[in-house]
Image (tube, rainbow, N blue to C red; front, side, top):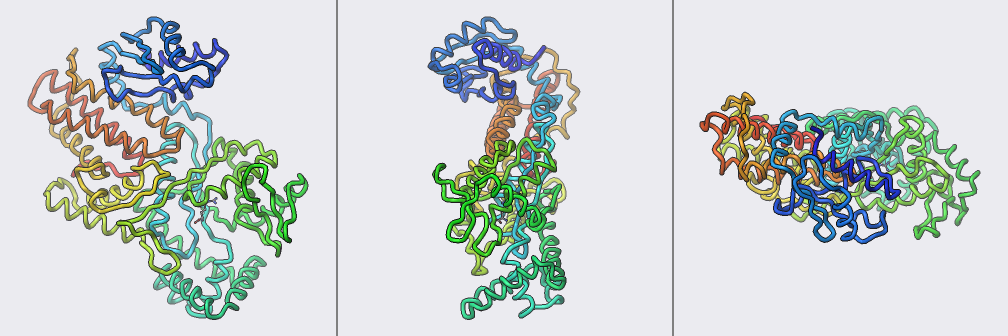
Length: 565
Ligand code: ARG
């Protein structure tokens, strides 16, 4: 039997196309919601999402659609309720849903992105600076978005656009030559690079000519000065060594490490194209693209001295990426502070007539702070990400020991839970909201936290280790608690699609929490082990399904599956 939702979706699609509105199955699926209260049905279509398309009011659409759909296989009742159309499934629907969940097969979701390519630019730190709290958002949101799109069948390229080319590199070279050496650098790593960068800032306040020296050094670098290129490469190697460690801890892989430096020789052609297309204007010696018609300040393309700027490079890089990957989506995860920059250069590519301009997406996020402390950059007083992870792991370990709950290797579990807690913390709010971490709120095993999800996953895994599941649950009739859990678990595919559409990992983290609540309610109210017969088998089946779905959520969020806590 085809899935009931698929049938409903197809019928709604037919209804819409009869009215001259053609949408993909993916788009239609995206309209549906699961009502919070099961008394309102098993599936709901909020018709206000259709009112613009159909040029009619939601309540009228709902009533008309109900009449048009008539009787559907697997559906007991279709009820128009104001702007909503609610579907009530027939009882045995839950049994077929459970069977589907047990296969853990999501090829239907995989099909939605078949043949499509996504390029995702995230993390992208500026070399010679250690990973700090400011990098957490882009790194973990980017990774989750990437996992989500992979799950949806996209071919994804994770791209780390290292900030490895700019006047700051000139400053670093000057500072290195004055106050450091190779040995110190090898020994102290990126810390040394940071020390001399901060020192440069202080000294330049006293002696502004240092800034001229830095500019000159960068120009030398651009002109291919061998000594400078070697120093620069050393900075890069040392930085990457450290970044790789952090990425490894987080289980993040990048496919491409093309930093800003790679795109330098690709900019002149873009500047020329802008000129040819009549888009460049000279303003006080600088070259700009006027965006007044779009209520934005101008995009700066060339400085007065002819040097290029951040937008110039981004345009050249996007052009190169389209030629290289032929992307359907090219997305950038950065703090919301860069939103204007992206809006501006996206607009420029549109004005250039680039057909791929419409495929560019900015994924902004809010600030992250710890216990109210924002990161104070430049002063050297920053919250380092590795310190945050270390402390989270130590705290996780203390909790695990105190509760005496670890069944497996304590070290591994503490690492997975500590890091998972921070990752989940960064993904639990809508990304655009500001997040303030507290240890309490991040690490508690009982709150809306990563450890709670991992602990619930481990609880299911533990039941399955102790029980003997054989799949023979006959025609057991589920009780309300069990139905509630199946309903919740069955939402998974739709939640992933929604998370993909909105580039919003928090849809998954919130959903994972609600699965935990449903599973724990079931676990407390319905005895599993020792029941014997079909009841025990049915409940074990539900436990398998819960573990599958929670495991998938952890994978998507970029957290470790914890088999034993
Ligand atoms: N390196 C930049 C920064 O640290 C982020 C780069 C984002 N990606 C891009 N294509 N502009 O702020």
